[in-house]
Length: 268
Image (cartoon, rainbow, N blue to C red):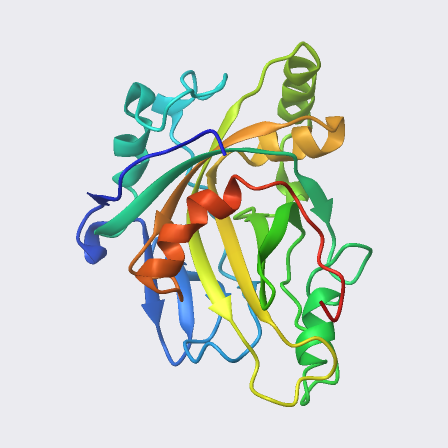
């Protein structure tokens, strides 16, 4: 954790915002009126979820903010970045968090995949498909820590489009900058979903706090950081109204994110 700002009102009325949250029998993240990601179910007892959909094809980078984000922001309010990206979002309350993250690229079903690892240990596999949940996208794991004896925080950074869509030259440019000590800044809209299974879980029953950052700007930066093993700064705009978490849980997040990283051991 670098800095946190005060909760604030950002965004445009939903019909005018490029990004918004919607519900069509399921909880969705929409971009330009197209469903981009299916999110965790409202019930809170189903597994944590972010699943890329076929219509997720758009990034939301702002060319006007590109120069300001080449290096590290030192304050969430620096350079008017919050206001610039806030204009893409649906009207609501947001908590700005300025974080340093060290991303590790994860491919679903392979080593380090949350959905076939920690999630299966708690919920088991999907009873209909006989498989773990599948997010339909590579994603980045960045941080985790204990909340308490019965809860654990997991942090993810989710690109709007797969890293394979990134421009190779731009990725290499950022790798070179990072090797010279530059720490660029990415921007995301984020959700905090707290999910806990019903009784009778297979092995390891506890609450999963999922802090999921959906990238608005920084697709090339995150891939470069993962490639080079370098940190990147992340300005997170956490939606308070669209997260599956109480006001008290959201208020705890800055202190939890400031803790040392800690991996959960199954069963405790």
